[in-house]
Image (cartoon, rainbow over all chains, first blue to last red; front, side):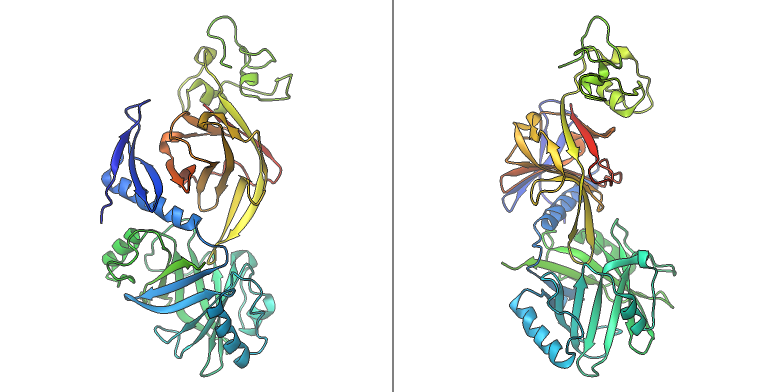
Length: 263
Length: 185
């Protein structure tokens, strides 16, 4: 989908041209010059995406996680009422496993067995701003180079088996990967079980415009996670999740994280 | 003011209109005798002879360094969940780093509300209040020249900003408390 715009020519220099548009009350001028139409369209998408990022609430938000065109999960920042109900459920089954209310910008959400390695339904808890401690890593019989760790981790609480999985998030993956969309803030995650085993499915996260991901999915024969008419305006979706099997390099389902500010 | 079009001009010294160093506000105030050469980036930017082309004193005649804003670098992190972005430069609120004098004359005397680079490789110049996408051509930060025409310009909620995306080099550096001159021409 190409976005409509008007072209403005600078009064100071006729070679200085811009694609201009107004959206949701905000005005944009994207450099045009001798760029191709595709590059101009990409510039518009990037501008809209930056604006969405700029407007993100620091601690009151909800993520709708899409996979194969349906919402498979909703995550809430822990300061919200919806999150507190889930935290009470967690506390009942896994008392004091974590400091559930450490930050208002942590997240919690109910998940289902919509993809491997999740076999049952449960509740996810994401602790942001902190790397997993050495003792937490050791309790899952794993260790990582501290400098490769990103400052958050996830815990997946299986409410049926009462087992916990640890999702460790890191910058550099030293194994082979299938082709993945690239950007300056890519990162990976590995899922560890309490019995010391590790899932063969590796997560990869990319921060990109919907157009880029739609094209990537089409090229690789993957199911684009969003319905065709959902979030085409780069105003919400800002993070995309890919999964691959580290042994076979087979792709898993693609996820889209649509973030909404909750006021 | 601009360097003189006639008569002598020189690289260093305290004579207004004749010293390149004074025009660029380099070296100690009132003296302006830093180590300076024709080939350095900010001198080339003033001469409008960037890149690998030759540059001489003659190219500097009549040139104006324009407006200088001096950023004292602050560093902060924004945990945007799923990744933490690190920012380097100045922001008005919450107050991090500082800027002098912070009133951008080339943009209708608007207050600079933010001027920073982040590790998502975006460099942003944020104003308090609206301005038009005109009035200056280049901003040179610590010798790195960025053209206004290559920036995405936005006015959101009445506040204007210029954003350079995919700016992989951090012109402010990573040292808290370092000062970096940004010259608008």
